[in-house]
Image (tube, rainbow, N blue to C red; front, side, top):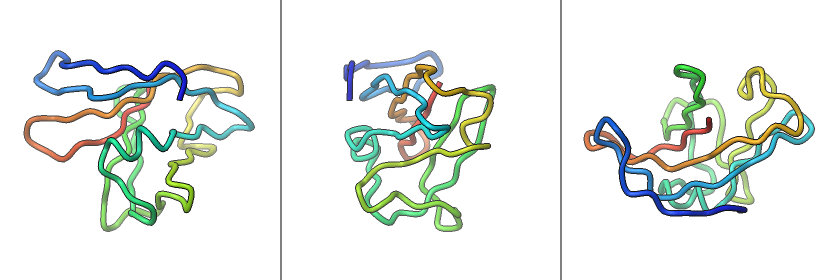
Length: 107
């Protein structure tokens, strides 16, 4: 939860409500609870994970194959982490588009 901050807007009409820095450890990137909760996700929610222009997007989806874990975190493993290696630092953020529900983005 290092570096949590509030950002009000981004180009394209979306708002970023919280962001923090996350680090890949053991080929797993753990999105902190503060980000997951800020996106409106709850323990057990099904999520889908996609990569769009190099950014990982985590969205709530009734057909998602992954869930928010019992600790309230989203854990991204292997192919979901892409070419990101152990020890690399990324920014996880909650994005609130004007025309869709909030989602988590990792860059």
